[in-house]
Length: 59
Image 1 (spheres, rainbow, N blue to C red):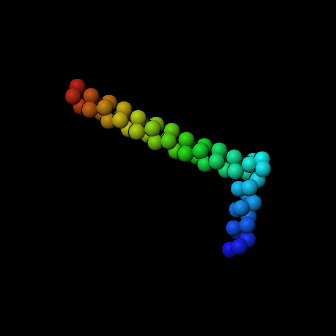
Image 2 (cartoon, rainbow, N blue to C red):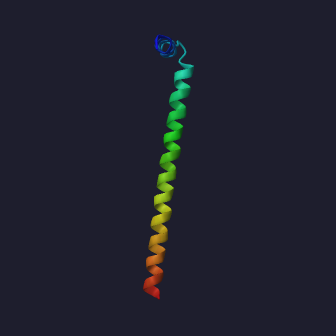
Image 3 (cartoon, helix red, strand yellow):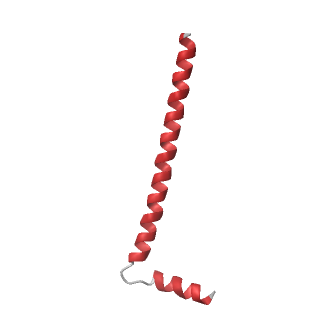
């Protein structure tokens, strides 16, 4: 446990912060991709539902 704490402290005290910056960017990228996927899914399902409703009214 002490080794893990020391390792995390060393990462956070990194002068350049390269590792921390990469972790933050990776996490942000994953969140952005999930957000885009959710928006696209909701848009497509709403479009399909509206098209289906319109077709049933025409028929």
